[in-house]
Length: 598
Ligand SMILES: Nc1ncnc2c1ncn2[C@@H]1O[C@H](COP(=O)(O)OP(=O)(O)OP(=O)(O)O)[C@@H](O)[C@H]1O
Image (cartoon, rainbow, N blue to C red; front, side, top):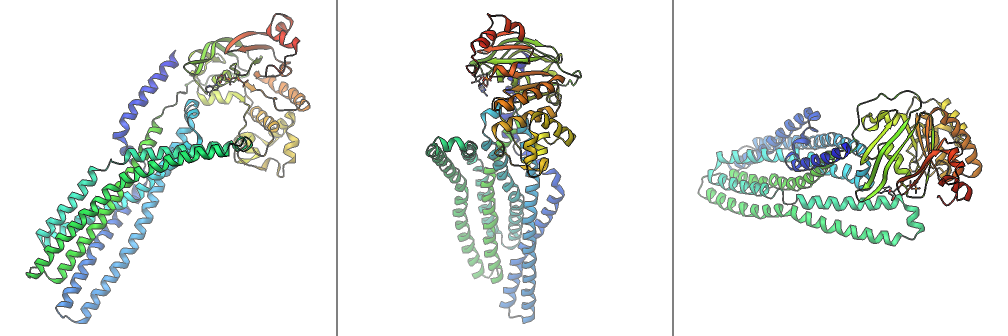
């Protein structure tokens, strides 16, 4: 009951956080800029210098024109030309460095965000991961952040630079000619206000675009992961059909998002054309009336042209901002997802084999379909339980809830006398081991894959364990023994070898309670009997649960549980049940329905 309360309060918290996302989307990102504030400061200083130089350049040209028009000496003109060259080259160098530093700041800050997102995803519960494909997660951890990164890189450089340049141009123009300066200011203010106003126009469509793109990645990842099934079942054309449909959605949503982003830009282009015309007409009038020199007329023209660039850059940034904002919202949304599995605080499990108790446990993946119903049983430390039952009867689910991959709906599970919800998760995982039917290999050496990157486990212990479990001849056959590099995905192991591999992995951690889900289903009879003896020996030091399809796997267990439709049909001592002709177990044994269980 208490877990149900936790779930609903988590959901409420998620909703509240979703509401706050809109307000917080910029502020929370700033924390990622904190570690790079030194670089940001240098960036800003360079940027201001570059802006200053950009403002000076037309002034030199103005001097040059006025000097030439006044018929001054050649040396003054040459000096002015030389000065212009030096300022231009220096400015270019600063621009290159500003661009480098802008990208550097963006990468440094967003890589931390990528790391936080991945760490967060790895901690989210199975219910969340069941709903998301790995491809979709890649897009969310990397694609969304790349958008934010582009925004960081260019935003800092361009927005601040553009505003300073605009302020410099307009400020100077007021000292030259007030009416022209007023026209330029009105045009600039209109353009900037307009862009502020339409800033959010494309956020939702950009978010939709990213969602469509995440689905596309999800499809590609899922189908490539199941390539064998896709090829052997002739699914290629079906997959291509789905692919084209998703591509179409990406295209349509992308086009809409693009259109929403370019509207502000196009509008400012029109505004700019009008402004240039008015400024030029006024400039010519003042020149003809002798109020300004030819050099000043050029300066006015040049500064008007220079207004275009920062305004365009601001326009580009509005687009980038829209893309980035959708990325920020999605990243923030992901970070605010809370795992339903909350770690407890106790790490007080007793040493040695651990007892286990299920007390009226009910569990379902979806509310409408109960998977485990009122399960009550207990095992003493060191006892072994064999679980049998038809496909879909809930055997694997029983082991998943024991390891807190899912929270139960009601009831209580105790390991070593402690409610598992009160246990620290790392303590639970350290003491309880599970071998499932799926074995995942990671990119790394054979040793790393067996120890799961735990360098406390010695090579001698690995070799001793693999010898007992019958995997040593396979390791010996590898070119570099334990140092052999294994590729991710498991393509280099047969299904049976993978099962031996998984068993070795779990026994290397010396668990106090071990759950073996169909440990020998993919092994031949000879290997199975060798393995059986080894597993029996190793399980002498722990409590064991064996989920089996074949009754022969269960000859050494103390107790038997028969599951059916998520309920316990029978639970008792193996020998007593075997002797009771009315028991399910005895009937299965005598009728030889060994395969029918599977
Ligand atoms: N991730 C999941 N989401 C929703 N339903 C699930 C999920 N995993 C299993 N189920 C359902 O829960 C029920 C019990 O499944 P479970 O895997 O525990 O059965 P099992 O007895 O281990 O079967 P098998 O012998 O085939 O391994 C099945 O009806 C299955 O469809």
